[in-house]
Length: 96
Ligand SMILES: [Zn+2]
Image (cartoon, rainbow, N blue to C red; front, side):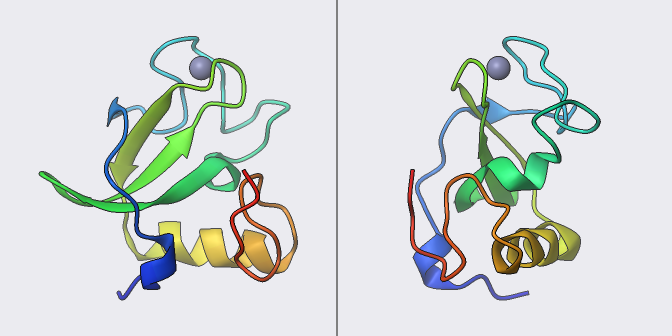
């Protein structure tokens, strides 16, 4: 999997094994009103554990990251095409 370099950012926040649940405020990014966690990705990063997706919590604005498998990047691009990303427009420009 090759991530477009324009989406690569420095690692921010902490590793979150729970992926869908904010480490700080417990908000639910799987079934909650904020939608799927992939909509809140602010970029991808090469962390000490490997390639990760970095997320910003829509409620408390803290950052966390999780292992980015192929599906994470695919979901990210799908949501982008559909205009559903919070931090990027349909062309992939950062709007956060
Ligand atoms: Zn939070």
